[in-house]
Length: 157
Image 1 (spheres, rainbow, N blue to C red):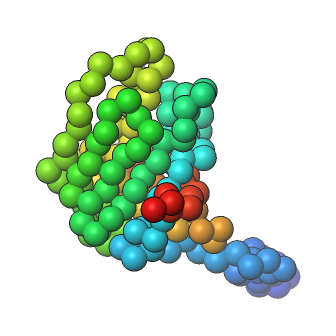
Image 2 (cartoon, rainbow, N blue to C red):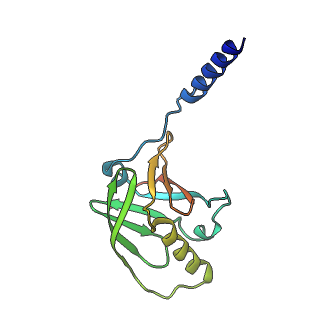
Image 3 (cartoon, one colour):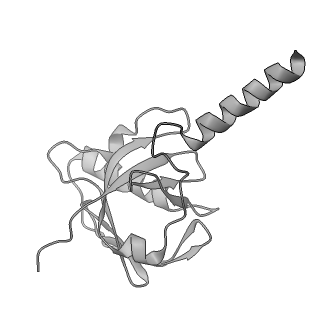
């Protein structure tokens, strides 16, 4: 009886794990080609307690966006422009030699968005990146923050 119960639980766990009846698959580490294919717009961000990080979303402003280009990552739609050299080390996003403009930011919400975006992507150890089964980019940092970015179209030339 106990053995049958355990086998049933095992089969149930396997069924849930492989997503019976769905096309779910595990998150994967993105390649540089996948990151550089398009800009990534922030759609959701939560802290370690699961609370929405409101500071990253400023009403009336375009979404915080990451743009990867060969060897560089830019942070767009903030008060100041930020860019760093980047490379991947496994699933870790390594940023080096960053540059940030120093324009005065008004109002206070925009200042806080800039600060919070910096906390999101900078830190030691470096944040991790993953692509989920919907094609979204998931960034997790050392503070326990999780940010979900959706692919966006490339700007018109």
